[in-house]
Image (cartoon, rainbow, N blue to C red; front, side, top):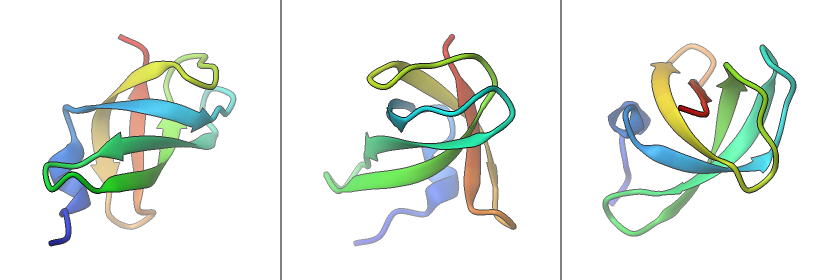
Length: 70
């Protein structure tokens, strides 16, 4: 099965490649099928590798999420 990435909004992910606020980094999340997804995330707050973030939006055109520490 394949997860529709937009379904991950509202879930938490773990930062694997931090980025400055407003830049795109990477996070990993385990989807509802048990598959690990590595996703692009535009950070809304300062984060470090290993931080847990909340995915707040998904942008289909860039295939990236917006997220930050809550």
